[in-house]
Length: 452
Image 1 (cartoon, helix red, strand yellow):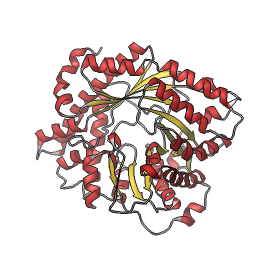
Image 2 (cartoon, rainbow, N blue to C red; image 1 turned 180 degrees about the vertical axis):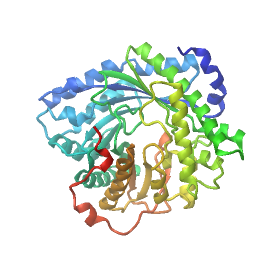
Image 3 (cartoon, rainbow, N blue to C red; image 1 turned 135 degrees about the horizontal axis):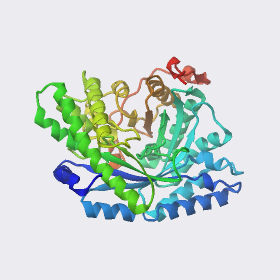
């Protein structure tokens, strides 16, 4: 049984090393909100979210004040809206996003995720309607997030959906051009998406989850970086052990907050996601952890090996600290949200190709990467296909969050502010993949998917 005394040893981590609870996310099932009348369905969605999460922000703030643990975000994730809206007799799914945004504003949460579709093996009419609504939905709402799962190890990669998502990202950027393509920062394309992810923009509430659930995302790159400073020059065995012990402490804090939030809200506790999620603040960077291992700059040779060690040690330490580790759990490498990644990308050492290699061994994938505004939809789709292939073959979650920043070129920077930070425009290959993307169809699942 966890008690408050277990958190005392982490006080200096909170005060000096940027340790925080990145998010308390309440997952809410909307399956009982299905209605043939779209307007009525939207009313049900608003009512259920506002009733279920009415005390979420207040509870998070109370826990934060009582335990002295910063809780940066309070969020909501919902059933993929394509599954809910599919019951309605309508061609326009934007009102569903508007209902989510109104409920977000009423509850006071930071983000709501779940304007989503799961199309890894094929698209229903509802799935296609939702995907085609994404650009307008993200432009018309403030903090609604969208995601689409286009592949899995079991199903393969839906290349028709990949092609459509390249077009969708391009159009979303155009509709939010006045904000640097900000809409794309709220849109994630997944392979092997998980149902209990508390992090935005990819969170949605899976159909196998309970009616409501509390998931917590912890973050502590600064704590890990500080711990490694005490083992300079020592063998990697010592480095791995140090990271594991640090991840254990971080996860125990997340477990405490999750259980306390669950008790006070009378909502079942789901998982602790122990991902190292960086911020643009100096001292809160995954890149700087890798450099502390001995790399001159993140992105140079050896970076993938260093990241593999970090990701594995974080998972091992977290699993020992909680029986309910889930979500994504590992190390995130979002370029715009990591001060060290921004510096490495700006210097040209960290490239898109190197980031792709790094995603083979870390959590998620190509995240918050800004590319030139004139990047074609086909090139965006090809980048998505490459990343999905890594996830499919390696039986892991991979994702793409690309921002083709309108009017920007390599050397420019696009600034989103807050946790989303600023991103240097990174070059993409100029050679076309249009004929490849035009083939469509489905890339079959790998041989090792045939397990029953």
